[in-house]
Structures are given as structure tokens and as C-alpha cells.
Length: 212
Image (cartoon, rainbow, N blue to C red; front, side, top):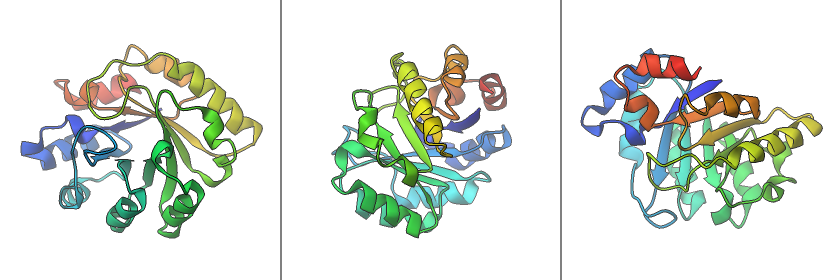
């Protein structure tokens, strides 16, 4: 299981120290939630902050776009060379075109599905993706309660990936803790995003270790 702490739950007053602490604590990715105040009712991180995050991080970035006008934001954040850029399928009219654009930057493309969105929307896209991010909360704010139905969704997605013999990672974001991590692993999940569970703990290293 790979761990991607979401800096949405970090203390932005000491952000560089927070980033270094999760990297030193053994995280695999630094998850960056970009929200524009339109697609979701919250406004978070722009390129100036991501530049600082990139400078402090010793692990690759995992940028999650929760925005309108995805193409604009992909172009904005591509220069930081994250490992992944993920965008919500609910907001994008030209999904395949945007996937190819992300690839053209040498970045791994990922598509995000909200809790209510069907796996059928990505059935004919899986071959072009490196990751699918399943939301296990409604996007917009940290600290929400885990939606259990994502476990069955992850199992079905894992089956789709295996039947096509693809190397596509499954990531789950929202309400992840030591209480549901084994169920997520058993469902075929490869990466978990954990914000409040990690940053709300007294030891980031212990929190990351407990998940792994």
C-alpha cells in the first residue's frame, strides 16, 4: 500500500516543515488538492504554493484537480512535473484529449470519479490511464466520513483492470484511517490519500506506518 498524505490538512504556517516531515516519515507521494471555488465550494492551492511544496518535497507530487477548465489548470501545474495529474470526469467534455495532453508533458494521467459516478464512464478509457482515483467522500473539504460503498466500487474496478490485463493503479481519497485500510487493500486499492489521519496525529511517521 502506498501512502499519499493530503497537504489540505497540513499547517500552512509551517508548510515546508510539514512537507519535510511526511517525506521523512515515509510517505510515497505528496497529495496536492487544487480547488477553484467553482467545481467544489472551497478554494485552496495555486502555483505559488505548489512551487514551495515542490521545493520542500523529497517525494513526487500527486496533483488532484477539483476545478472547472481543466486544461488551463493542467497547463498551469505541468511545469512542476508531478508524478500524477488527476481530473474529475464529471467536469470534462473532452476526456481523452486531456489525457493525451497530460501524457505529452511526461506526466501520468489519472481520472477521478465522485462517489455517485459510474465506472462505466471510464470503461473505454482505462487503456490510456495510469491511475483511477475513487472519491470516498464528496470532494471539497478534508476530515469527512468515509463512504463504504467505494469498497465494492474498487473491487469492480480492479476486476475491470485485471480483465484487460492493464497496469492501472487504484487510488482512494477521503476518510481513510487504520479502521478501513485493510478493507481498502483487500478491495485492490494501491494508493490511499490520508489527510487528517496523518496530519492530525502526533507522529506522522507512526501514522504512515500504521496505514502501511
